[in-house]
Image (cartoon, rainbow, N blue to C red; front, side, top):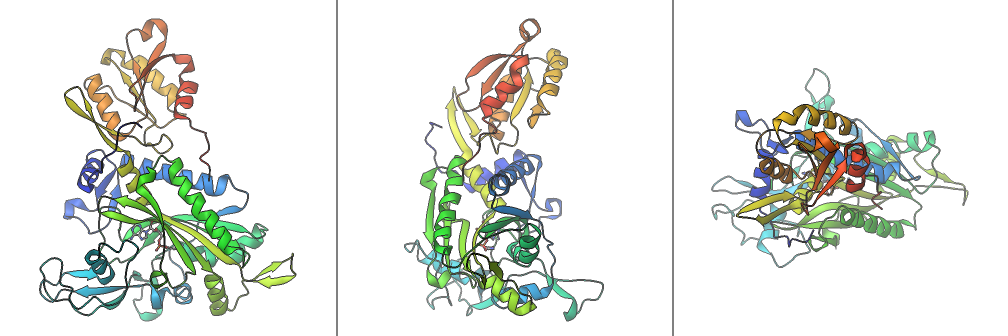
Length: 459
Ligand code: GAP
């Protein structure tokens, strides 16, 4: 990774994502549907790799965390108890002239570029004008971001529920079931991945802020009094996770929330931020939720959600540390981070330097000539049970290398006429473009070694 990385624009990434089958605008043939996106054949692989890696490091490799997959639709009482019905709001303002709508806290942030920490809250300053037309803005009013829906055939107040705005509540309401069925002792965690929905006032910046997205959240239940230490540990572990994935440390930073911007449930929150083309923005939040959620659900449901601590012979309400991140947001930063342009002869080589663990295609099989198709397909059949692979025999070999570089395939295997004599192939490595000749019999272990798959990413 020796080429200095210059900041890439969002337009470049969005256009590559569409052209190469990573991300498509939703409902495009009908003129599009604001703020949702569809993941194409390579996007779905990238996303799945990110989720698998997170699951492996959070659940598979740990003795103290178990998984869960709770329903998206839950009793509306869950959202009342959690505080989302009353407090999951953003301040909204409208322009009296052009009628455009904005999040008041984002406008303030734009105005005060110097204040890097903060997303100041409250009504817009009186001197603020519409950023689009300069018109006068209304007073800020609170807008609840949960999507409402009706359960059953009758649309009335009694049948209202919500699409979940976070996966976390599904974990809290299953705390007792999980702890009992898995005989867990503190500290332990419950991890979940799944869709979440927010009626964002100002979605945007491609897949950074959308109305439908996927979260990966883990609620780590600890003894009160040990929460601050665990919070620190999880902040460090999660930060390290991104470094292990090859994210440029110059584009990452930690930022502690100021009191005024803490979510209604949080005792303290540290964000891992990424330096996006428009500036620093939240990638992942690690919150200390205290005992807010278990206590509230216990009060509202009249069910005992305490934990009997055998060490002290007491019933306690555990505190919770929560690393929470959007898969789509990780995907965006991995695309921004991977994008490189390099001069190559008289053209520019675009190469997506994805970490091999997340690269959508691990290895491409490229016969030098279509006459070698039959032999090359046999070699592909050898490789494909082990790695996500692609076979391509269309166009010049140079063009095919470029296509694979642009989608970030770490290794290309070239089958040439010599292969028929020596039963060997050439492996070309994406970043160095170095080539090595390997006997076909050793191809699978050599590819595995070169991808360093199986090497655990430490958390
Ligand atoms: N349970 C805590 C929680 O949901 P959050 O900071 O609101 O906290 C966690 O969300 C993560 O989910 C964020 O750090 C971000 O990565 C992702 N996220 C939140 N809103 C999003 C949106 N509208 N579009 C894409 N990702 C989003």
